[in-house]
Length: 379
Ligand code: P1T
Figure (cartoon, rainbow, N blue to C red):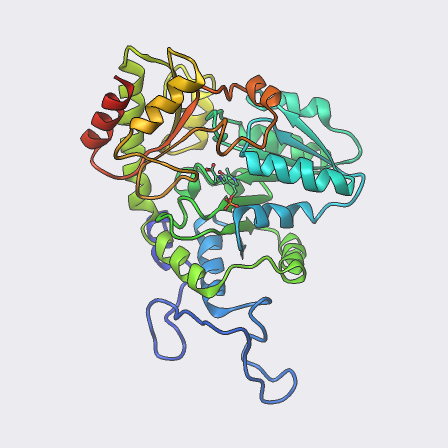
């Protein structure tokens, strides 16, 4: 089955009760047993729920993994990965990543004795300098949030395999439509399914997908034991979202390209960060490991100030100023005060997240309307 067909049919079956094509929303916490242990595959909805199971099967299918696990948020999914580790273990993470992930690593898991090295991974060779006998996990986000850096997954795989450490890739920005890290040899794919997977800004959810059965078992144990699962209603919505992922992504990419080129041509715009530009430092890697360049773009204006950025985002009419990304509607964000405010200013600025940076999640509206909106706001 090819990708577009998988989004609709991958590991999906009509429901057993009445043949409904979409799985019903099994809004139940528990399941009747005829005798202790006499159940039909489901005992308690933290452990498993048929609607969530249908979603988890779909996630596994579209990422070409064997096993999918759905969580109550993207951060809950990352939290589950970190619980594979123990005090004294070390993680090498990209230094340009979602602020909430950075906060989880530094404010929660450092307190439990896990050491994090935040490393610029645009040159993947940098990773190797930080590997030691305690290293257990390499955490990669690509494209990165919000600087749109591209990390060479294949090179990370070589390093991870050489030192026998796990490689996890946060695939939120790319989605499996553009990039399939498990196919390249990564061990774990993570999603904030809140974003493109759900696609309609109507749920908060996370996902993990793996190929290896033993790793899946360990993560399932954590999912059940810690309990950060998502509910059946959200599972249904995410599953519905996945069925149009490919058509949405195609339009996000087309609109993203048009907006990126428009911004670059505007006399008041300074820098535009988008991996589809031929002069993006890792354009060749993006071209190789992704099928297109996505709809996420960051930029700054020549005014290069907080006030300049605030005045642009305040004037937008079709782009909504809001946290999050990946929905059908276009959003604009101000990383320094919104999504990345939890990263200390000094650290933020080292990776380029200046007060003047604006991040766009380009939606699937008409290109002309989006460009006109940006033009009037920047002018
Ligand atoms: O918000 P949540 O579903 O918990 O997912 C966290 C997360 C993880 N990884 C990446 C790359 C993300 O972008 C996010 C969430 N990001 C935003 C809310 C944002 O606006 O960037």
